[in-house]
Length: 202
Image (cartoon, rainbow, N blue to C red; front, side, top):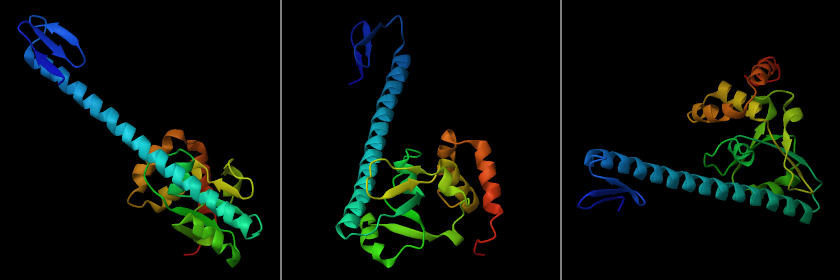
């Protein structure tokens, strides 16, 4: 119990004592409530971080399984560029729970299907219908834990621009979180690059 009353003392939280002539019962209750809320917030944050780490580990395991299958079946090493939720989690950009992989179709051979299925939930996006800069490969970051395949994460700025132009239901919340680590000047530059593309499907 966080609030204890004695004959001439009020104890708040974990042993913090006040004499009754130093603090009113109402004030003691207010301080106790604040401590309760702080403890609950801390517990919630721990739960969110725990879930985030679990999902990130699962995504990394799926990618590792994809690499193992590619080697097992002698599939020629290939590049893959991730965007969307999986890229945000693997890059540490946001903590929203998602387990699906979105990546750009680089005219992959059908032989790669055995490897891609290891990602479980995935969506292969045609470049001509994906709102990214034609220079997206230049700013992408390579995952360092792989030896056989080359898996890249689109930059946080490229991801933001795609969300700004698309502006889906969850995009506004994601954009707010992503902007904390983004280069705003670069965002404007990427928007211009996307809008200048003449190969996008209508």
